[in-house]
Amino acid sequence: MRYRRTVTDATKPLDGRSATRTNLVEVAARLLREHGPSGVTTRAVAQAAGVQAPAIYRLFGDKDGLLDSVAEHVLATYVAGKRSEHSDPVADLRAGWDTHIGFGLANPAVFGLLADPDRALRSPATVAGLDVLRARVHRLAAAGRLRVPERRAVELIHAAGTGAVLALLAVPPERRDLGLADAMYDAVTRAVLTDVPAVDANDTAAAAVAFRAVVPELPMLSGAERALLAEWLDRPTDSPA
Image (cartoon, rainbow, N blue to C red; front, top):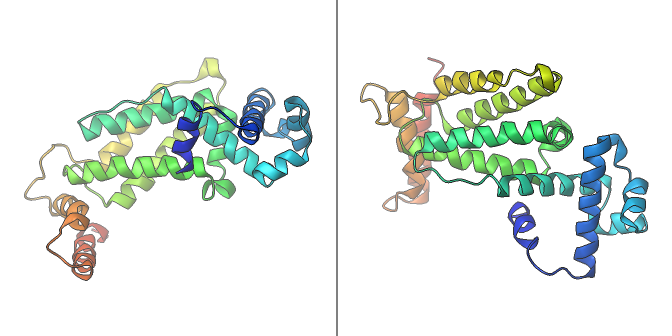
């Protein structure tokens, strides 16, 4: 995964091509931070990095490829300093939420790139972030804490987190109410989480979601049987009721 290599490669000696690439990404990240997306032109980046513009096209394909690499680099650097592990999946979700909000407020220009619908589906940084969120939500489902299907929970949490950051960024820093992000977290978790760690025997939807989370790991079933069981278990949670 490109996201992880960006973090680990930073500690290794760089050859000439890698050194040039790293320099271009760091220069572009600085220009983005200081001047916003409009300030990140191939000419401006090349001049600031001391290279010819064609080097950008050779290494990144085009300006969008460069911006994707910048977003990846900034996000990976931020997350690397915020890593934490929690045995409680709910605490892990909250830590991920706080990291998401903190990153967006600290890096508004990069967050704007990641939130752009035209870029989101192909941005490696966005894809990596969603993979992390899916893993956190899967832990919640396996623990019997979800009242909605995993996909629905991921969509709701992602939408709430992105909306909270964009709403806060639209307000001058001195007037921001950071309690908005806390209120949004409380609202979305009430919608997706059960109130108790154990699955309530009377809550068939939560029980189905919890069982659905472990279906891929049942070795006694064939692939076709697991797929059929997963389809059956999705029905209670997909019901409009």
